[in-house]
Image (cartoon, rainbow, N blue to C red; front, side, top):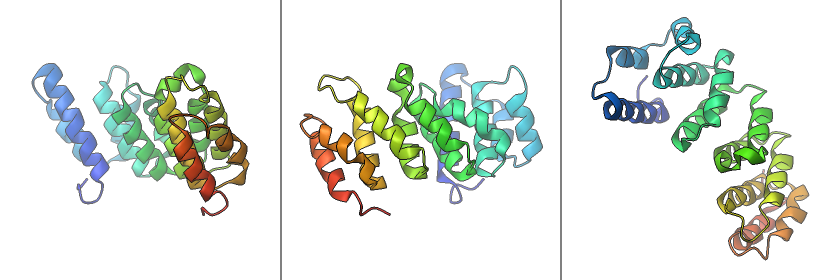
Length: 200
């Protein structure tokens, strides 16, 4: 895949190559082969075979996802919930390209799981990008949990505020007004309130 065609793919390959070199000191031949293959059946075998390294499954899931192959969906959702934010971002990009109707529901489930709130940032941004029926209710739910001024996950709340502003849905007004006094979220909430009913 050419970088001009998909810079996100090339960024992922560079990141994974660095990870492998840092871990083992040498990049296996299989890595370069997998990075260049476009055969969906080979990619699917890599994705589902037991014992494959994380880098191989990530490449296969991404390549299948951007090609529109629904067999990548479950793996991409797992990567969307990964502790490594770069993997989450890559998975979100592939899920957007995949266009699977299950994506918004999965992203909403991840975003609203309070036990995984530390990893909710990318699912929240994905929900805003998708503009799905699940997007606004999920972002409101998460934002309402971030109202305490001392909440350590205020960046997640900020992503919700910004996402709700981008979505422009008037249902978000009460939740945004409630965080106007928040020391970290108030200014962004005011801007988002100004966008309600105007975003498309």
